[in-house]
Every structure is written in structure tokens, then in C-alpha cells.
Image 1 (tube, rainbow, N blue to C red):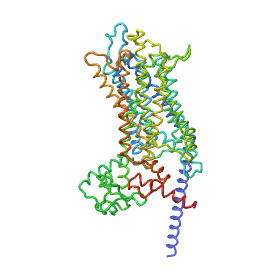
Image 2: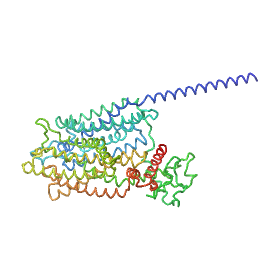
Image 3: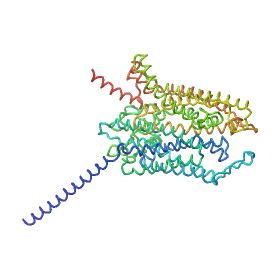
Image 4: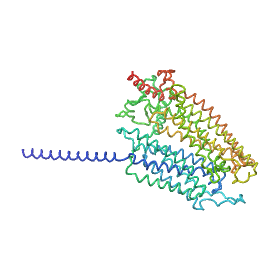
Length: 624
């Protein structure tokens, strides 16, 4: 018996020792994993990430300005058809980041999405470079003395070009929506007291490098294309992108790689599906009914009365069947939270104001027209140096930078000093002012083009496509500056508006909406141009958007855009009035004592305002 007890005790001690040893090994493995994870990320990864994004922008932005000339001269395409190709390409570049963000958030994660995007961008640039290197990839050059013998590109040649442009669009969709967030993942350490400062530093370097990259693209790459040729002009961006891709993957072992999580886009789809499934189910009679489904920590306990048909998505029909044991929805495609419903409502409510920015984006996307204008004008600023025609877009960026600095450092402080208290110009006012500047830009473009064309006719150079009018191209700078001011006011205003109106959970949507507007604008710009080309060229007449800028009537096309822009301003006024006060307007009104917190409605926007008011009252109470 004693022997058996002794054996049992020995067996038990052995088992305990083994367990203790196993626990120690698990703790050591966990500590080692934590140690490894803490060594990853940090500022060391920033050059690899920022360089990748910067060189992608240098390549893609550097290819865009002169591309219309490449399509017209090397592919023998007319201006309207070539410009439509660029519109579709630009639309794809602006739309693909939405798809890229969805894939990164839901399936692939940011690292793989950026990696695949970088590879796709390089392959696209490589194929485009091959169109310049391999003669069989495009039609033979036209005989200037016998233009009627010009051959159009074959279907295979156009398909090769389309694949190159499509790959670059896919690449942009992988790199652009993820780089900023991926970089923030590397240095976002909540336990670090310098965390906020490191994030600010990263954001500053990111936006500075992005702006610098675009300037390099619009000057350096364009200059190479103009003076060295397409072979080098397309080869340099491809080489830079190859270097960026290799560099990005070389640092793979030191990146912090967050796993993919559920995407907000899936949440929107779930609300729509759940509302449709429950369309025949009656809504609770009382707004404060206990049948609404929400999480305990949510500030939304009941939905708003607006867009009531969506409220059916968050009604609990049978608690035992609809709600799982952990408090989540048993089937998220049949039951959603009140917060999910209100998020979708906020997006729907913003859409009318978002649509007003499309017209400004249409005007901004008309980059091919100023290029042809500049090419036909005297671009010399000295006897030996002239500004490349594709580099006039830099004045748009310069204007944006100057406005941001003046607004923050001079205009607001001066206005505050004059008024005697802090002054803030409402975001909706700035957006409206941007639309007005955009309309003025189109009107000014029409006036300058009218003068340029009259000079070309007077100098007898109408039929010479390469002739230069005796008129300085510096006359084009004001219209570019107005476009830059329009973007600085409206585009920045739009982004600020979305971020202020949406909760933090919708920040990815807020950052994507402007790009989506650009994509829609490119498609509409293509439709407008095709319509103008078809209508004005009937009966054998010269099209307004003719390949020969001197024979066409680009000034009339500009006037059409100016008229549409004025109509859009009026449309914006209506949408702004219908939307009601924004978050910044409510804050200003509360600060001035014009409204009280009791006037707030039960909507996402007002719930967030109430929450912020509560924090403000707590602070004031502590101070008192």
C-alpha cells in the first residue's frame, strides 16, 4: 500500500513537474513572441514604406501629363478618343483604391495588398515601356505630307496598351489606400508616451513626400519625356518602381503586419440585406422599445426617424434565435446593430453634398486641354529655358500649398484678431467657395483660349499643329491657380467635412469618398466630351475638341463647363440647405449661445455632438 502511495505520489510529482516545465516553456515562447513583436515596426520601417508610395506617385503622375501626346502621335488617335482613354484610366485609378481598401480590410491585410499593388504597378509600367521599345506594339508613324494614309492601331495593339494601363490602375488600388494606415501600424504604440508625436511626424513626412513626389513627376519625368524621348521617359518610372518594390519586400521581416478584419463595406451590405429581409416585419410602436439591437457600450440605443425603412435591420424579432450567447447577432445578415444602421444613414445623407464636388473634379480632370494650349504657346522664361508643357500642373499644387500655409498662418489669425475671438470659416462655406473658384477657372480658360485661337488665325498658322503662337504660355498660370484654389477649398473641405460628420469607425469611407468622386467625374467627363465631339462634328464640321486645337473651338467647350459649374453652384446651395447644420456649425452656434443641446436630434451626427458636449461639460465642471 505504502509502495503504491509512493508510486502515485512520484507519478503525481512527475506530472506536476512536466506541467510546470510546459508552462515555463509556453511563457518563454510568449515572452519571445512579444519581444520579437516589439522589435518590429518603428521609424526604421518608414523609409521603405514612404519610398514605395512616393515612387509609385512619381511613376503614375509622371506618365499622365504627356500621355495624350503619346496617344495622338504614336498611336495615331484623335484628341477626343485619346482623351477618353485617359479619362477611363484616371477613373480606374481613382476607383480601384476602394476595392483595394475592401480587400485589405477583409481578406489580404495591408502588407500583401501593398505588395501585390507594387508588383502590378511595375508590370504595368514595364508593358508601357515596351510599347515605346518594340515597334510592333503600335501602328507605324504617320506621313505628315499624306495624313490620309495614317493607320489606326489594331485591336491587339490597343489590348496591349489597355493591359498596361489596367495593371497600373490595379497597382494604385493596392498601394494608395493602404500605405498611410500601414505606416501608422508600424509606430502606433498606445503605451508609448511619445506615440502622438511619432504619428504626427509620420503624417507630416508622408504628406510632404507625397507632394514632393507629384512635383518631381510633373517636372523631372515630364522634362525627360520632352527632351530625351518616350523610351527613357517611360523607362525611368519603370526602373524606379522596380527599385521601390524590391525595397518594400526587403523589409518584410521588420514590418508589423496587422491581420485583416471585418470591413465597414460589409457592414453596409449587411444593413441593406437585413432591412430587405425584414421589410414585412412591423417597427416597434415606441421609439424607446427594448426590441432595438445594440451593444452595451454603444451611444446609439435607438435609431433615428430618418430613412425609417432601414430601421427594420436592427429590430429583434426573437431574442432566443436572433442573439447568440455572447450577445452578438446570430446571423449578421438578418440582424444588425443600431450603430450599423446609423452609419449607413450618415453615408446616404452625405451623398447629395458629395455629388456637388463631382463637377469640380470634372473641371480639374481636363488636363489634356491646357497641355495642348501650352504646347502651342511660347513657354520660354529665358532665352535658353522653357517650361515643359506638361509641367504647368505644378502651379495647381503650388497654389494649394500656399493657400494652406496662408489660411493657417495668416488669414485665420488676422480674422481672429480683428473679431476679438477665434474665427473658423465653416467647412460648407469653404466647399461652396471652391466650387465658385472652379467655375471662374473654366470661364478664364475660355477667355484665354479665345485670345490664343484668334492670334493663331491672325498669324496664319491654323494648319500647322507644331506651330507656336506669339503669345506667352504664362497666361495659363491664372487658370491653373484658380483650379488649385478650388481644390484647396473644396477638396480639402470635402475631406474635413466627411471626417467631422462620420464617426471614427467610418474614417476609411471618409478618406475614400473624394477619390470615388474623382472616378465618377472622369467617367462623366468622358461622356461629356464624347457627346460634344459627336454633336459638333456632324455634317462634316470641325469638332469643338478637334485634334487640331487651332481649328477646333476649345473655348466653347470651356464655356460649356463654366455654365455647368454655375448650375452646380446653385445645386450645392440647395443640397447644403437640405442637409442642415453640420457638426462645425452646431459647435459654433453652441459657443455663441444660439442653440442648446436639447435641440439635437436622435441621429448619428447629433449623438456624436451630444457625446462631445458631455465631455466639455465635465471639463467645465472640473474647472469650476
